[in-house]
Image (cartoon, rainbow, N blue to C red; front, side, top):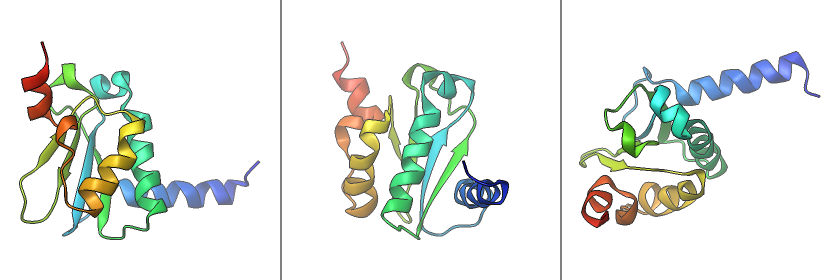
Length: 125
């Protein structure tokens, strides 16, 4: 069992990493956390991104949350904003997809096309 001080320290560190209003010039990973996203499983996705970014010590990457992104049927939705690049929208994201998105897109700059909204929309029957 963790002490109240340890839990408060963990809470504070996590809130700093998720703070949407924080000015940031690096990469932003934004997870849709409205009711629709939460119902579809966005909480574990958000946690997986925070864990993966922390594990890799990616100091120029911020994981944030937002409200409804507007495409509820494709939740959980994650948007990636890299400086001087177009936003990339990943859809139906599961925690199992997070490590690949971070490794390929965030670290190595290669979008995981088959997880994007464009790919999903053109390959569904």
